[in-house]
Amino acid sequence: MYSCKKRFRWIMLGMLCAGLLLMGVGAGVAFAEYSSFTYAGERLPENARLQNQSVTAMVDPEADKIVISGYGTGACQLAGIARIEVGEDLEPGTVRMDFQYQSVGPKLHVSWDGDPLASTIRVYWYHQGSGIELMMTYKDQVLEDIRNHRLGDYVALQLTEAVITVNPADAEKIVLD
Image (cartoon, rainbow, N blue to C red; front, top):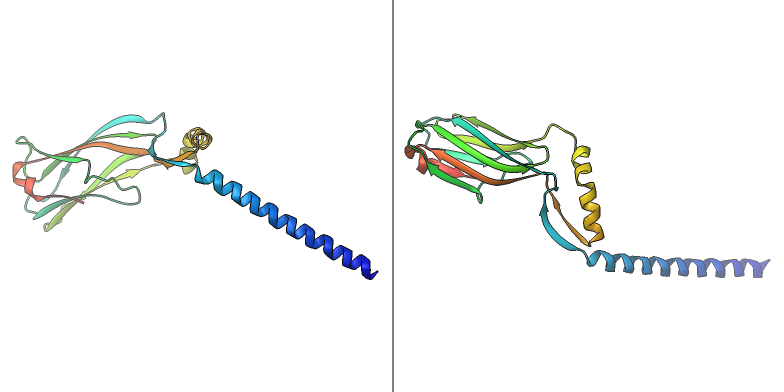
């Protein structure tokens, strides 16, 4: 009985060591595989559509500054893309914004307030559908990227151009945030 117990313990110790060895080999292979992936940058799905949108906002013409900023979790990054132009045909306090973007569902929305000290215009993305719908849009692209050993940031929208046109009296008041 004693030798049977001792033999059983040696077998269990051998199985434990073999399991630890196989686990180490598996972790090494997984690490080698994952470290061979490259970063592909921001990626839009192939079916993204180019869209244009124009919005006219009325702000307080007496405001010291007009702040135009991205708002919320899907904030638009205007600072590097937006171009400010002067339009003689616009009344003071009128801001016309022309956007061009690629999207697979989310839409661009703009809200503003007329605070006398600093009028604020917020630009943000709004998507009424579900996250599952967006995930299914990317499914084939993500699987193809994994096969090619690359991964990226899969975005549902991308702002490509923003032109902000204001009256010459308001041009110095514009602040992109």
